[in-house]
Image (cartoon, rainbow, N blue to C red):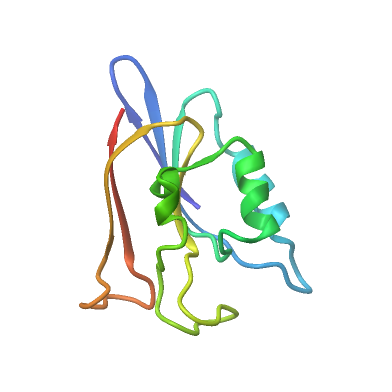
Length: 133
């Protein structure tokens, strides 16, 4: 997790970039989320983005939402399954959505897009949103 705080005149926004693993013999995904959230101040606006390595149809994704986070890119449900990586990487078969932008507040999403699908820069695509804060 990398975190930076943006101090505005009336609020602080914590910008967090993260890369989480999946549950295996060494570690549980749920423990990773809990450890990450323990280092964040939920009283300020949180924007948490990165590779969460879970699809939207998993218990792990539900656990993220149950911890008070909102999936900003999928605030319009038709975008819930927009693929964010190339097919068949790691444990993920086919093209799925494993990269997210979460917030601890419901925010108005003005625009969203999956970037770099044709001009690859990684095995993941870019996830872009424009917000009204």
